[in-house]
Structures are given as C-alpha cells and as structure tokens.
Length: 247
Ligand SMILES: Nc1ncnc2c1ncn2[C@@H]1O[C@H](COP(=O)(O)OP(=O)(O)OP(=O)(O)O)[C@@H](O)[C@H]1O
Picture 1 (cartoon, protein in one colour):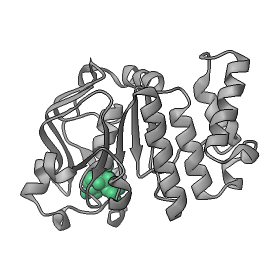
Picture 2 (cartoon, protein in one colour):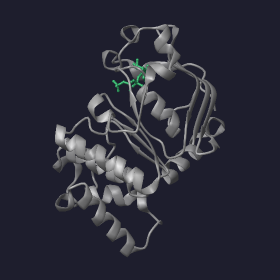
Picture 3 (tube, helix red, strand yellow):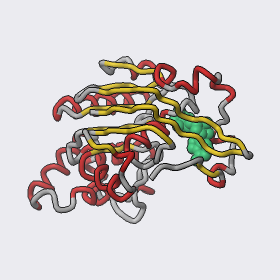
C-alpha cells in the first residue's frame, strides 16, 4: 500500500538546512490500521503531507497505492488524493460559506445519483451525531462539531487510504473515543488503510498497531526533539525556503 525509501525533507532556516524527515525505509500493508505517535515537532504532519502528496520530498521515493507519487506533478497528486484518499487535516479546512452538508457533498460530485447521495449523507451525519446540524455553517458549529464534519468529508467516498492528523484534538474525552471508534469502524467496513497521528496514548492503544516516529525518522535519533524548533515558536515559518524540492 505504502513504500517509502530514502525519503528526506529539510527546510532552509537562517542560512542552514534543518532536517525534518529522514526515513531510510518504511512500508505499510494494505488494510493496516495504525496510530502514529510522536512528540510535537517529530514530523507526524509532515509525513502525512508527504503521503497525501501535498508536500514534495527532497530525495527518495514515495509509492502510495502502487503509484510513484514522488515522480508526479502536484495536479496529478491532487487528483489521486481527491479520488482515492480521505485526509482529515489538523485544521479542518471547511469552506465557511457552505453548510456542513454542502462541505461534505462537495467531494461527492459526479459519484452518486441524487438518491444515493441523500442516503449516504443522512446515514453518515446520523453516525457522527450531527443530523440536526447539517444545514449549519462552520461558524455556527463548535470546533468539535466542525472536526466531525471534516471526518465525514474524508470518509464519505469510502477511500482506500485514510490519513488523519490529530482527528480528536478538539473533542472531549468521550467524543474523542467515539470518533476514533468511528474511524476504525469505517476503515474496518471498507478495508481501508488508516494512519492516524495522535498525541493520545490511550486512544492509540485502540489501534491494532502503534508506530512511534522515532522508529522510522532518523532525524530524531540524531537530534533530541527539544532541539528541533517548534512550528508555533517561529512566526516567520512561511518565509523559510524549502531546500531542493523535487518535481
Ligand atoms: N514550512 C516549514 N518550514 C520550516 N519548518 C517547518 C515547516 N513546516 C514544518 N516545519 C518544522 O518541521 C518539524 C515537524 O513539524 P510537524 O508539523 O510535522 O510535526 P508534528 O509531529 O506533526 O507536530 P505536532 O504534533 O505539534 O502537530 C517542526 O520542527 C516544524 O517546525
């Protein structure tokens, strides 16, 4: 399902290259359900961005669902993500002008008949406990509710690969458990591969497999995590230049 080889990512910061990911080799089997653990700054989001094709690597190869996406242009990777992956991002990315239902419906375009669409939307909104909030816009929903809509959007098309970045970060303890159960249940139902980054060890133990970033990211062996600058502490983040981005 996933095969990474000699993958490296670094950013140029204050005139020198700051290594973020160095993964000699990593494989994930089809249908695996894995919690990805690691301290803040250990590269969990960066790795998920690489797998989703949002981020280009500097060197190495990334094969996802049999496709060598490191060789592809961004538009082709976007297409793969839209058609075969579900990505629950840390900051939801819901469209503020659309209702919860419309946000989810948007990614179903051209895939189902009107009736099928209606049935699928109703069933999923009921499953996430938001059937009575379908017609509310994101700013009328709590962060936890927005997060559940983002999860519904990622899962509605039954993707082969589900990537989730802290999908329970905004939820209270019982909603977080319920949400993880939902992710695992839907992945089980469809046989999807699920990789879920989380800080929460208790939630991680619900997954058949747990992987710590330290097991695959050589940068963490070379530099204790405290020495890796934290994203939040660098307001100039977007001004930094990426080093040697591959096509
Ligand atoms: N555009 C960028 N420019 C420079 N450094 C970056 C950039 N994006 C991420 N980083 C750095 O890469 C490292 C890994 O970040 P990443 O967001 O992948 O960590 P994480 O494990 O997901 O953390 P968290 O659990 O806090 O979300 C951090 O040190 C971060 O500052």
